[in-house]
Length: 240
Length: 189
Figure 1 (cartoon, rainbow over the protein chains, first blue to last red):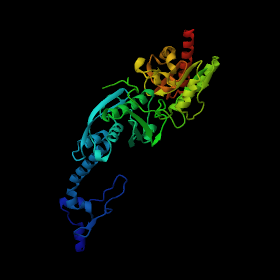
Figure 2 (tube, each protein chain N blue to C red):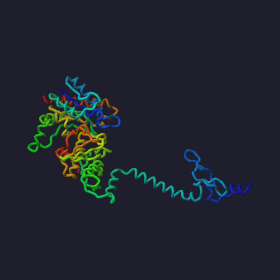
Figure 3 (tube, each protein chain N blue to C red):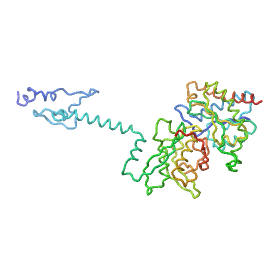
Figure 4 (tube, one colour):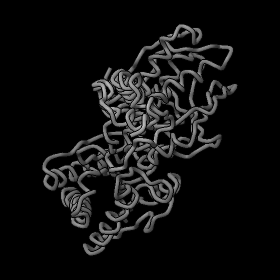
């Protein structure tokens, strides 16, 4: 028997016993030993994959814990809602000056008002833009009813007319994703008007445009051909 | 002439559920309702008979022509109840502008009492059909405002219509409106 043979088949220290164990198979029955990207030869010249080397073996438990923590972190990050993200933005001290706003939101149960601090930099756009964007983001409060703000709708721009009418140009999702009955449409439009009027007092009325175009109706129940004013459905039910 | 207006149509789908859309269900109810009314010797006209887009303006024109009968617009709601809506007018008296008083949308004012009576009749019938689960509303809906005759919006619960017994539910909804109309006529005489 050659020297090499003795090294290959002689007694094995306990800590190295697993190095000599047969290759393990994964769930599909595919042997993984020798298939790793990094491998070296042992002292006896036998093929030892990197994950069977003693140092690497001792690192497996901490590595598994780290991978588990990473997976949990990804799950938590994916599961966070837009609301939490906005809270984070509002509390970030580096995002710019903050302004207090009162936004009215339409819920299936009625209108709710929420006061909040919103990041708004006058140099980056008019206040009306920030108000409408905050409106479209939906309410933070939970448990008072489902929000009627159409999901994924975004603000394209606002234009202030000389007659005090604010033209609010919204993406097509505002119309396409509206899912409500006649009362829901009334609450949606009233809430949009109230949100703007409460924060931009010089605005006397709000006219909704979709993708830059005038539309006859947002939800098929109400005319959107004239500006929303204070006289538009003031009797709307208020939850708070 | 009874004008039946199936809500939405074309790319205006209304409420979208997993299987059916509001525009299709409203049309199915309206078609059956038209058949029931004609079988009962009533003149009925539908604002649309197929899946087509109809602007609110076009619906208002149709409603304006319903000067000798009544106007019923059929919709659906996410609410668990049948919803009966008549036109409401905010304010009044000296505070209200002349423009508002004399606008075409004010034509319904003189028929409000009759519209509410029609709503009362529908309430009785719908309560019997759906187990007393009816909500009454007054809303500033333009399609009702222009009608120079009793006018009402009936919204059926989507959950009730979007069922395996779809055809039966459509007939039940159409029957509620038809019997409500006839009950109203009978009480009015």
